Amino acid sequence: MQFHFQISSTPQKSRERQVLTALLALVTGVLVLIYPNFLYLIAGGYLIALGLMFMYARLPAFISGFPIVAGTLIFLFPELIPYTFAFFLGFFGLVMLMGFQFAIMGFLTLIIAVLILMNPDSVAYFIAAFMLLYGFSNLIRYFQNRNQDRGDGDDPDVIVH
Image 1 (cartoon, rainbow, N blue to C red):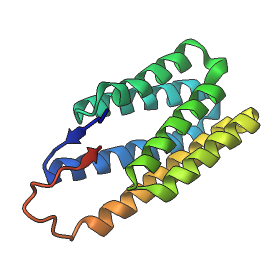
Image 2 (cartoon, helix red, strand yellow):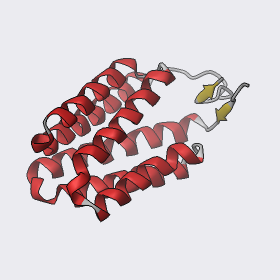
Image 3 (cartoon, rainbow, N blue to C red):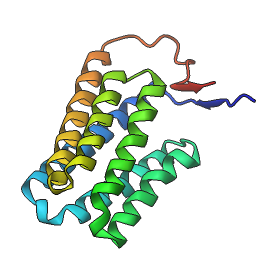
């Protein structure tokens, strides 16, 4: 059995999504550091916004629905934030590892997920660290790739076989 997902977009839309995702992560990380008491609102809102951005990018329904479900669970059951967010980070880290695009960030994401499970009292700081790390690394990758020529634009962004 073979699965084949192909997500195509123009380079301009891909770059816009990359910047938007990075800015969303940076703003969320800063908000979590400033207002750790409102973690369930900030983290739940981030996950739902991320799921909606994935839907806008026309990613497969399972990938775009997962953050929405996790964000809704955080809104409904705020006491489950450490476990829900660690589960999301584990899934997100595996997706990054399987995509081979962001392998180092995938490992760091999995480590942060394990740290959240080991010390759920510090979940706000771990979430803020992940958000800031993910946002800055995404912006750095954007600026590194900004001046590179992507060819004729017919190459798809993501191919999973």
